Length: 177
Image 1 (cartoon, rainbow, N blue to C red):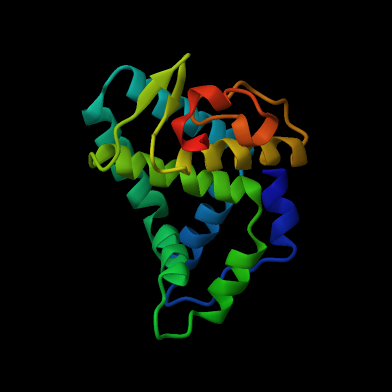
Image 2 (image 1 turned 180 degrees about the vertical axis):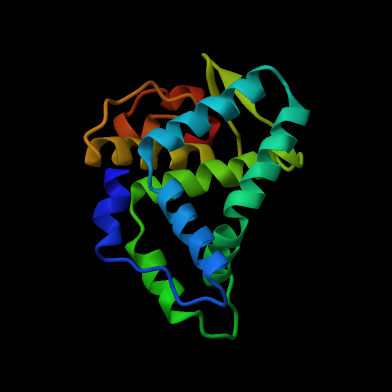
């Protein structure tokens, strides 16, 4: 939450069509920037994967889509914009996002690819990895930065390799060849 409060001094949610959309974007921005919320979501995803609870993952993705889908779509549209000029206000917000926001975004994207079967998780030494995507490793790296910058205690990562962060687990992660 501290990361969001610091960022909110710089960031404003863009003028959108309605107050409800504005509130939803503000809530998503706060949720994506909250290190503790990201860890809770990581715990939830890891628990569902370890229990092989596909129905639970699908339900979780439904909640993510409902709560954060509009924000995720707007962020995705910035990187996928071909032959059109991205919304300048959303571009400004995207450029100001920090590692906690990126970690939250990656977690949600992983939940989507796990729920729809685009990726198959592998558990190595109790850590969930999604071979061939690098999303899990990028999440671990961004979450590590997030916790350091937010001055939160570093927890053992449950998703992704710490290889790019501190060199540990590189031999266990085929994406780090």
